[in-house]
Every structure is written in structure tokens, then in C-alpha cells.
Length: 141
Image (cartoon, rainbow, N blue to C red; front, side):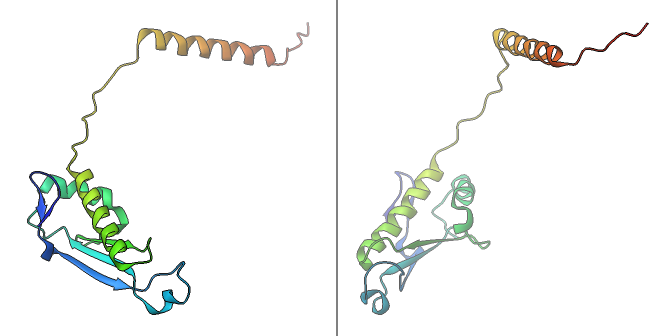
């Protein structure tokens, strides 16, 4: 079991890891050794995640989440499998922890009287400037 928070833990069998070849530094080693990790977590079918956390996770994951609800994380930052594996796991845990935080509800606010007066004064000054710039019409009698 992988502990996410005090109330949420994910079973290791729900996580699938695949090792693939990574691009980037490493010389000839890059062409021979599969050090990058593709971690797949089927969040949509997971019984470990409460519905509200799952909903927020969908929003946070963005393009990393498939239509079926599978979260895919690619880790290729390091040169070793173990480090990339740990990096992918840390990113998964961090993403789920972030999804557990409930957003602060927005409270409607109204503009203060002083801010309204400032806005109107700025508008008045701007209008005055524009009136000064207008060409003066000649009166013919």
C-alpha cells in the first residue's frame, strides 16, 4: 500500500510501470538501456479515491489523463531506472495530494465607495483630456 494521506492509500497492484528508452543525455547508453518510466494509474476504476478527489484529479491532470480515466506519467529526468521510477511515483503522489485539497470557496465582494469614486474621477479626467484634443469648430455667421 502506498500512503497518500491519512485517509487515502493506493494499492500497488493499481499502478502499472513500463520501462522505455529515453531521449537526452547518456551517450551510447541511451540507445541500449530502457531507463525512462511510463507509470499508469487507472484512477477512474480505483476504489481508493473518493469521488470529489477523483473529480479534482481529472482537472489537475489535464492531458495526462485519458478519456478512460487512466493517469499516465512519463519520467525520464534521470539516467537510472530506479531514480526515474521514484520520480514518477513522487509525481503521482504529489498530484493526488494536490487533488485532496479542497478549493477555497469564492465569496462575492462589492467594490468599495472609494474605488468607485476613483474610477469615476479617472473617467472624468480622461474625458476632459479628449475634449481638449478635439478640433475647434469655426462658427460662420
